[in-house]
Length: 484
Ligand SMILES: Nc1ncnc2c1ncn2[C@@H]1O[C@H](COP(=O)(O)OP(=O)(O)OP(=O)(O)O)[C@@H](O)[C@H]1O
Ligand SMILES: [Mg+2]
Image 1 (tube, rainbow, N blue to C red):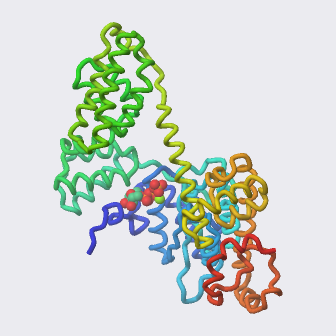
Image 2: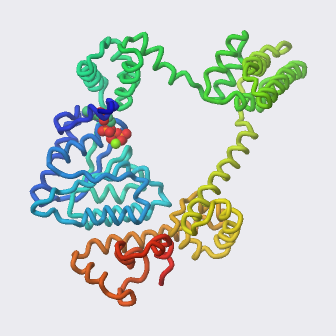
Image 3: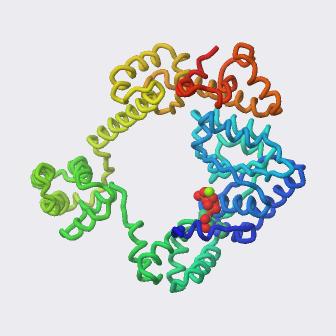
């Protein structure tokens, strides 16, 4: 059997296994029992609480204990009309005499962004209206403005941050079951770091136990400290300038996620802000340019053995150049983000966006990304600049996100996004409507010739999937947004 990560292996199977959260459990139990009895006051529940405190676990335990089949969906999926349709269909189906009821879980609803997913929020509200099955949503912060409508439509179930005692209890039990030798002070250390997030505590415990066969404070401190040791770039830069010895500068340089090249940009950008004495400045630049020469050689010839020299020059070399005006190194400076990195990351983002758009369009028109970039994108851009209404239909049909729309037309982005959200919402509503009708009507309607089917546009008018020819299916996403 494959080895399961402990967070999954030790997931609560029953409501009783969920540690703490007595209030949440009581409210949730009452709610699910009202569903079982067939008279729920609220159709949906919103589980709200910090990460790793048992929200998803409780949903699973409820489903398990009350014999529901769990249908799970993540926030990022709500944006696709096809997925909404799938869930709507499940939601609208009444529990049969023989079949099991379904429990619908929409996980992490706070992951929806405000504008682009306005349609998604509306779709969820509509879903809650039509559902004949219990719906649970989870969120880390249900008090966000955008979630207000969902909050109002559901039973709010608040979860608490787990206490250190709770976390320790679970860790101890896992150690026992896994037969891992585990010191009490190590457990304490892990629980302290986790700040109530049991998921991260279990993961830490597993990482240490896996790697070392036992869990002691010494090992935990050595292994788990690493995560805390990474400093923000400006802190590292400060530590480097302040160094009086080579080892200090070297140590500072090792405490960052930045690549050596990026670190050099940071030093380069901020050097003239920290050092003002002309001679000191000259010395520092001299060292930095030396480091640059080394980097050039490393890149050209792949001589990575030169790397330590380059790093030493740009860190210790620069710091120890401060001779004439030693006070300068303690001067408080507001460091700047390197312009070069900014520029590159901006264009990189743009390039990636362009790639993603080309991929989406390419899939729809069966063309390569290169062809789309060369021959199609320029026209799409013109459409987005000149004809927002048409652009919105394209955006909705292709399911472009805010960033993509902004890339295609910075000046019309807001208008197009709003219109697309509106179109999208319409479509989702149609999809939901279709499934809220009694099954018989839908079937009969499907049998009518196309012209007689009385729907204006959107997903609802599509023929049943089975009867479509392959070719038609390809273009379906887009067509649905244009048929009148
Ligand atoms: N109250 C709890 N009782 C028992 N185990 C828990 C509890 N909370 C968390 N866990 C453990 O931590 C893991 C993650 O918990 P869960 O997925 O329920 O967190 P969550 O509250 O949904 O967090 P997130 O908001 O990050 O999704 C679970 O697999 C389980 O092993
Ligand atoms: Mg969760």
